Image (cartoon, rainbow, N blue to C red; front, top):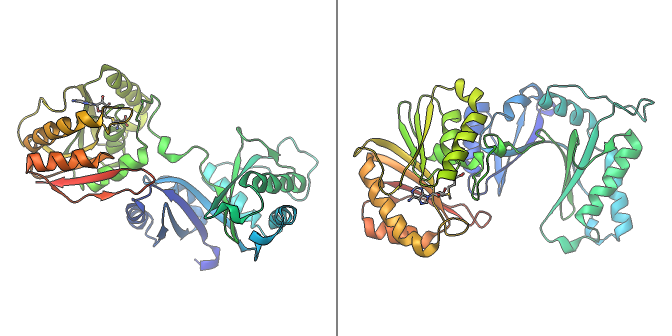
Length: 374
Ligand SMILES: C[S@@+](CC[C@H](N)C(=O)[O-])C[C@H]1O[C@@H](n2cnc3c(N)ncnc32)[C@H](O)[C@@H]1O
């Protein structure tokens, strides 16, 4: 297919896991991607848009329908700058915007040629604006930029603005003098896919996917989340990785209730997977499991805010690391997320068993993942 007829796809991903999203895109879509902080971009045939929405490491996906530099945008007074932003409407590839949206949503929307008579069936839309870098370099606010462009779209095409119940979301990104307009392919963020019962620290399904991927499990492996909260990691694991056995457990009865609700919520999807998932109430520091019986542990540790305290963590992490050294088979792995780096270091020193190959997920999450092996 000619390069010019490919769509430019922009995906927002978890900061620190851009490389993993790139790997998933390469292995599932067979395309190369470019990555920068919090995003991965690639080009793809239009008919393959539905495949993008099946990727498990991306939070949101868009098709870029305009990229433009407005020289000296930062120097223009507010009124002039906003007029320039309204004028962008003439340069947007609207055909691609509508086609991409239709491909992603699997339904048609009323098209537009000028202002049609029948306004009832026209799509509802909203424009969101994000500005990167130094915001004070512009004379206008992000809200004003979004409003101006939105008003122009409404005047020109008759699309109805609706901030909540919109069909089409357009995202205007401004970085200095560079602007891009993108049409969102998903209305609800993809990381909300598995959870209906939220707890105080429910994790995004996309982070869960990345963490299970890091553990490099194989078919027939037994994978454990000993501190599973509402079960987000075992659920995502069993939906994304076939032929494994996932166990989740927590010592809090309310967490187990959420596990059950979230499990029921995914019943249909789980019926189509070859992995299994089961939940138990237990103490993660005294697991009812035999020595060397687990291939991998993937977990989100209490990090001292909302759940647990940093004071307790030092002792708790040490107990957990000892217990995990007992149940994880030699050569198995542990992937653990926490922002409490000091407690991890203390537990590592105390246990003397684990080697850490982890990394920081950056300021955004203020978290590190620890990739342990023994
Ligand atoms: C950070 S939360 C996990 C959140 C989970 N990833 C989710 O998405 O819902 C940590 C969990 O560890 C549990 N926990 C703390 N100490 C525990 C222990 N000794 N045994 C089992 N669970 C424990 C807490 O009840 C809490 O649900």
